[in-house]
Length: 305
Length: 250
Image 1 (cartoon, helix red, strand yellow):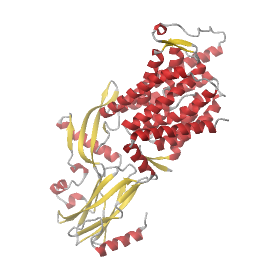
Image 2 (cartoon, chains in turn green, brown):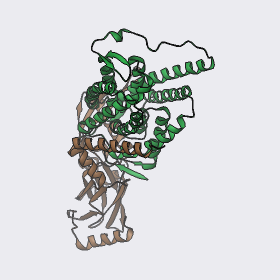
Image 3 (cartoon, chains in turn cyan, green):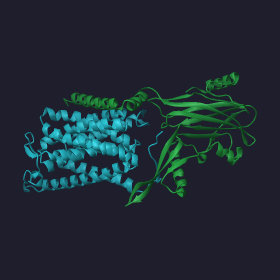
Image 4 (cartoon, one colour):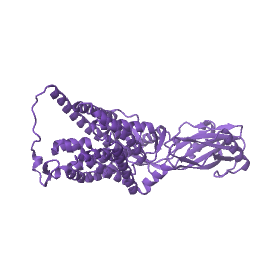
């Protein structure tokens, strides 16, 4: 059943969109990631313009994060003070990101920057996850490995403006969460992602936050950052398609429930191994698109009256 | 979509009444379209519009449909460090967003080249004004690239479609619009050709517009984009909350 999407201005099959939402939702429930980094390339692949895909996906991530954060709030796993710091950086970063996005779009380099960002981040994150999970699997087979310290003290702990975060049991510079939030905010605006796949490792390895508060806190700040991206994209580029977002999130919500139930049945390191391999595969597929000789070296830009 | 019967009735009525509403009567030619408004609704997957008419005496008919003129940016990719990157760009002004062509005989048999060029019959004869940094010798490449991309998107017709004559005076042709058809005011030019020149011509107006919920969403997004942004966020928040509550027990 075809449906005409008013902002994307193309007709797509509702069931295909629902299946995509469900599939990505399943993976996000399974791996505990937002799924924006998978959905945006998929949307572009089926013919939605990158501009609409990125902005609409930001809108969908708002919904996905809200339903996710509720679970963590009930369990008291959200560090609101840390979330607010990340968020302050994130609002500034995503506002800057949407401005950059409009500039790149006018220059005709938006598609390239989106693709390159995906290749770079999926490549790095995928490799790290794969490496880490392979080591974890090996450790599991050879028990009795050395325990590491909780966190190392580095130059990062010498930065000024230190603040105490009781929930996360941390005493660190406010500049750190602000900078991380800013950086991920830019990515959120340009790549149409929540940025969970960047911010979660950053919170664990850079801030040294306990894993238990990481996911809830990142989801909390992602809601507001993606809401900010949605609003700014709607105002400056008019590229948010609510009809498309609604269809995707309907499939996504259902898929995520099944994914979440499935997740308990697989050991964590195997899950991360799978996700790492999958992330690398998506990155490689996008890279292939950049390197392979295009069918037509001429392309049309945004047509305006 | 109406069957053949009603169309023939409309055609007969058109002939009986002479000048038809919407179509300006020209000497030796009467033409009109089965509808003057194509509505893009939620279920829109492209559509067909029947164009019909009658000529005074024997001759041939060429039909050119043009969508609203737009500015088109054409970019050429270059290989940079192994990656294909958009490099040079050329902007063409007044490019018809849609171009469709039909003829009752091969065009070269009907009109001499100067007339074909003057009436811009065929995409290769479109008068496009280019601005950009590309050298003059490269412009042909950009022009060809523009046309190739438009054909690929189903918005330009290169090989003329058929105009069928029923007897010697009645003609009909079916214009096809794809799902990605641009909205706006279209013009349907009907040329009546006799003895190697255009004996008369007529223009039939046609509007393609979004209608219904889709149109409302589009207008909302463009006319009050800030409110639309809040609306989009509110929907996402509610949907997220709803999902969280519904699946709470699970």
